[in-house]
Image 1 (cartoon, rainbow, N blue to C red):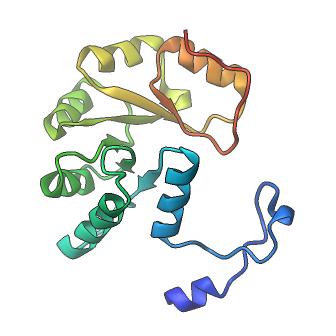
Image 2 (tube, rainbow, N blue to C red; image 1 turned 30 degrees about the vertical axis):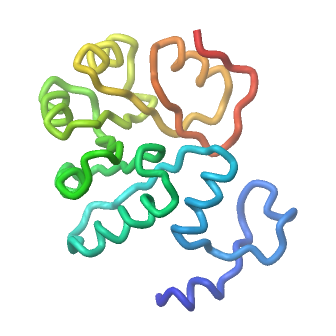
Image 3 (cartoon, rainbow, N blue to C red; image 1 turned 90 degrees about the vertical axis):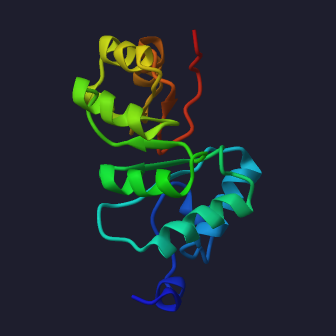
Length: 172
C-alpha cells in the first residue's frame, strides 16, 4: 500500500480507541514526537530484510531530528540489521532480539552500545546476570501484568516492553 492509502485508514482497534475518534496510522516522526512529549522510550523494530543505506540513514535522521539519538532503542531479530545501524551510528542504542547465550553475548558485545531484548519466557536471573557481567543491558517483552513485571524487575531486567501502563511495581 502507498502511504496515502495507509493514512486514509482509520484505527478502530486498541485500548480505549473509542476515546479517540478518527485515529489514523501515524508516521514515524509523529510516533517519535509523541514519545518524546510524554517521556516514553521509543522502541523501533526493524524487521529482517534488505534495506538500503539511505533507508537506514532516513531512520537515523528521524531519531536525531527529535533529539532522541540516545533516548530510543532500535531492535531486530536480524544481527545484520543491527550491524548496519551500528556502522552508520555509534550512539543509537540497539538490542538483539535473541536468547542470551555465550555466542550471542560475544556477538552483541562486538556491536557496542547494545544489549538483548529477550522473550520474558526465555529469561532467568542467572541469564540476566550473565549478560550484565558482560556489560550488556537486558530488555524483555511483552509483559502486561504487574506481578510478572515485578518478578522480572527482581530478576534484574533493565527494561520491560508492555502494551499497558503497569502500576504498583518498584525497582529494588
